[in-house]
Length: 441
Image 1 (cartoon, helix red, strand yellow):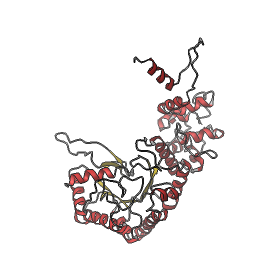
Image 2 (cartoon, helix red, strand yellow):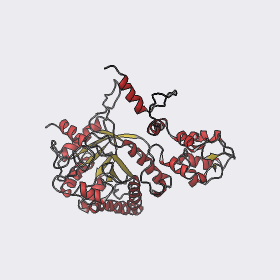
Image 3 (tube, helix red, strand yellow):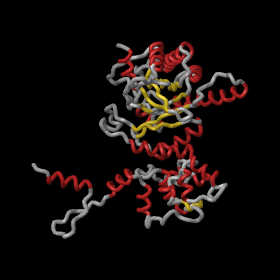
Image 4 (spheres, helix red, strand yellow):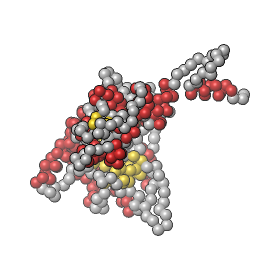
C-alpha cells in the first residue's frame, strides 16, 4: 500500500477527534503564488498570536486492541488496518511542510499491542522530526492511558501540547461502552502531565535553557450525546477538570453514530450539534467570565436552554440585578451583561476613568447594544423602552435562527373547523400535511 493511501485511511480515522477542526478544503496555488491545501488530513488550529495554522491530523495506526463501542477503529470492526512507520510518517510530515501544505502535526494512535508500545512508536516519530529534521513547528500529541510515566514525560518534551481524551462524561458510561478502559487509567496521565508542567515551570525560573515540557499545556475531549448524562453533569465535570488539571481546553464532540450498538443511538441519527454549540458557549463562561457550572442552571434542570445562549438565559433568571449603571458597575458584573465581552468590559473600565460613557460610546467600544440595551443604563438613561413582556424580551435576545426554531416548536396546534368563518392558524407541520393532501395524485 502506498503512502498516500495510508494517509487517506489514517487521516479519515482521526477525523472524530475534535481537538482541532478539519478544513475539508482542496486547492492549489495560483500562478506566482505559494501554498496548497489537501482535503486529506489538513485541519486548522490557532496560534497564541491569533494566526490560523494548518496541521496534519493523522493516526500512527488504526490497529487497536480496545473494543470501545463508540469508536470506528474498535477491535471488532471490519475496517482496513494500516500503520505508518515512524520514519515514514516523519518524512511525510516534512514533505508536506516543505510544500507549505501544513505548519504542524496533530498525532494520535490506536493501541497496537500495549500502551507503552504505541507511545514508544509515537515518540520515535517525534524524535525523528525534532532531532533529525530539526523541525520546530507545532506538534500536538495524544498521551495514551496506561503508558509508563517516563514515556509520557518523554512525549511531553517532544510535543508542544499533550491531550488525554476522557471520552465519556461518567465512569459508569465508560465501563459500559469501553470495558477495556477505566476512569483512573485516563486521569492518571492527566495528573502526570500537570505535574510535569508545574515542575518544568519551576525549572525554567532557575534554568532558562531547560527543555520545555508541553509548553502549550494539555487538553481533553468528551463525547456528547452517546449516553444520557445531562448538560449539568458535563459542565460540572468540565469545571472540575479545569480546576484540578489546569487544562487549556475541554473539547466537546457531538456523537456521530458509526457502529450499530443497542446501547448507542442508531446509525443515521444526526449528531446533536446544537447541544455541542451550547456547551462550548457555557464552557467559555466558565473559563473567562467567572461563572460556576451551577449558576448556569435553575433548580434541578439538567440541560441548557436550546434556543438561548447560557449568558442570556442566566440574565433573564436574575433580572433583579439589572439594569446596571455602566459608569459604576464593577468589572465582574459587567462580564455578566449579555452583549459585553471580556475585551469590551476592560475597555469600559478604562474609558470611564476619563469621561462618563454614553450609548454612542458603548457601541464604539464594542458592546453589542442589541443585547446589552436590556440590562444597562448609561448616565441613568435606558437605550430604549424595554419590551412589554417576558416573551418579547426572550425573542429579542435570540438570533434569527434560534427565533425561527423556537417559534416552530412552540407554534400552537389548532384543530381545523369545517364550519368556522375564521381561517385557522396552521403550524408548519399542518401546512406541510395540507400541501401533501392537495398535491395531484
